[in-house]
Length: 206
Image (tube, rainbow, N blue to C red):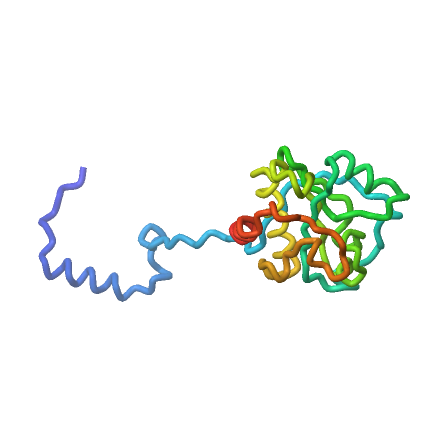
C-alpha cells in the first residue's frame, strides 16, 4: 500500500491546472471531453399513410410519367355519391371511363390507391386539370355529413399533406380545391357540408 504524501500546495494545484489548460484538447483523454448532443434528424416531408393497392382498369386512365410529363400543382377533393365498394367496382369497370388516384373509406379512413400518381386519372372532367392534379375521392354523399367522419378527415388530410410535400404544392385553398371549382364542371362536390377550414388546418398540421 502506497503511503500518502503531503497534500499539494495551492501553488502546485494552480500550476498543474495551467499546464493542463495548455494541452491541446485532442490530446486529452476522452473522459474529459464534453459530449454535446446532436439534434435528432427530422424529415421535412409528411409520411404517406398506409394505402391498399386496388388498381383501376387501364381503360380508365392515361399512362404518363408525371411530374416529368406534366407538373403537378393541385389536389382535387371529391365525394363519391356511392359506397366505397361500389366506387372501386366502377373504377375497375373498363366501360365507366372514370377513376381517381385515391379513395378514402368513411368508417375508418382506410385508403385505396387506384391509379399511380405518375399516371393521369380521369376524375376532374377537364383534361388540363386532370394532367396537373391528384384526385382524392371520399366515400359518402354531399347531403349526408355523417359520412365525413373524424377518421376520414384525418387520413385524407395526412394523404393530402404528403402529396403536397412530395410535389411542392402549397397547402392552401388555392391549390387544394373541390371538384366544383374545376372550370366547366357541373359537379357540386364536396358540397356545403365539407368543413374546409378544418380540413386545411389538418393538412397543415399533419
